[in-house]
Image (tube, rainbow, N blue to C red; front, top):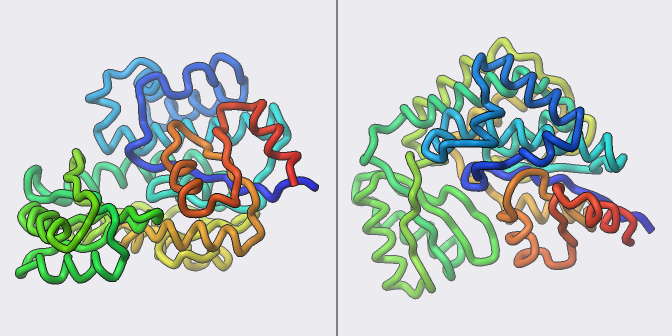
Length: 311
């Protein structure tokens, strides 16, 4: 029996210089996707993906359209080269835009423009050095929420990524995050690790970015997804086109409920997943939190073909 496939689209942190270069060389549909992104943005995003430099690729305003483009090129190449089509999809933070493009809810050209501005807005929302993020390992969600409440002391700190497999990322004011890291360790966290990020994503400090995104999204045409796409904010499938813009705005200031997203995919009957983009972050989380769902990298067409035919 054929597997019921989900496409998983990664977010920031999965980027790497060279991503998509081999795909570009091998696939005409991928080359067309990179060319469209270059034209829409007015600069050679493809060259930045392939050749760097890394410090430019990791600028949020560049990372977001770069990951979207690589993921979309790969999704299109998978369809063209292997005939594989997802039954459902989800994306982690920025990856949610890639999932919506794959489902036909937003055009690729519109999405590239939107996430370029989303990246700028998120980078500019909080001055450098004011915010921070950290990964807390080995505490459950309620314990991390309590740590954040007790560490806030009038500042902002809150769960930002509920990734599952005992991993929760927090975000907020730098001093509050540092207090939370110390408190988490004192309360039994296996590890509490400050992250090298440029801004405190998915917390209330991102409110200015959310309002800028709202304005950018306002004229964009949104359609109902062709297959279920799980919202980061609600951890359930979008119901038509009507609420998509608002949930994308809310996502900027809300935690990414990834563990619940994976559970929602399982409820939809997902038995296999393909990580459609660079890296293996989401595959790794899936293997730890939902080991019954088999995973493959979208860049490995042979593994994708084998996965597709498994029951």
